[in-house]
Structures are given as structure tokens and as C-alpha cells.
Length: 83
Image (cartoon, rainbow, N blue to C red; front, side, top):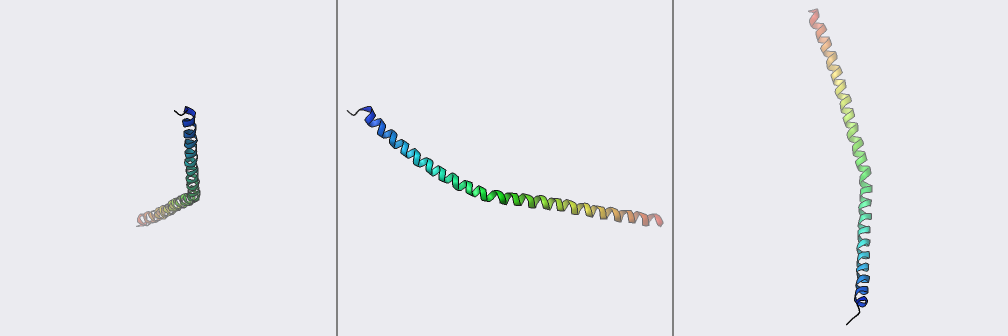
């Protein structure tokens, strides 16, 4: 009968090698994903800036339209009171 260490030690070495290979593959995948995220982050930043810029511009335009409407209403009131 074989000694326990003659069975256990080779199994442990084999397990260690398989784990090392598995972790290497995981590290490679993580690097690939990190690269993809690094490319996506600036694009999201640009989108955020564009969206906030458009919303600020929209609010500015709406405020300008509101001011013009108020000016027209004041002019109409003034004309109505003259009559």
C-alpha cells in the first residue's frame, strides 16, 4: 500500500497548478474588462455633460420664452386699458 504522502502531495501539487492556471485566466479576463470600462467611462462623462448642457440650454430657452410671453401680456393689458 502506498504511503499517504505519496498520494496526497502529488494531488496537492496538481490542485495548486490548476488553481494557478484558473487564477491566471481570471486575471486576464479582469484586465480585459478593466480596459473596456476605461474606454466607457469617458464616453459616459461626455454623455452626462451633453445631457446636462441640453437641459440647462432648454431651461434657458424656456425662461426666455416665458419672459417674452409676459412682455406680450403686459403690452396686451396696456392696449386693453387704453380702449
